[in-house]
Length: 84
Image (cartoon, rainbow, N blue to C red):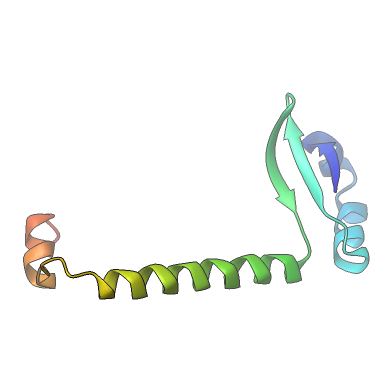
């Protein structure tokens, strides 16, 4: 993974994009020494999103197995002030 200043990435944007898209490289952009963003291949992003979906599904399944009392959706919306 290559770490470069955001200002350099801006100046070399086309080159950075080509390296990511065609070479599978990853870039971490930083400002004032602090990492602020990453440029990664679309395949990496899709993998991350799939992992997040899987984690969300596992958490939802675990929540459904809980024996705690359930709150009706309409009541919860009312308690949170989400009703009209």
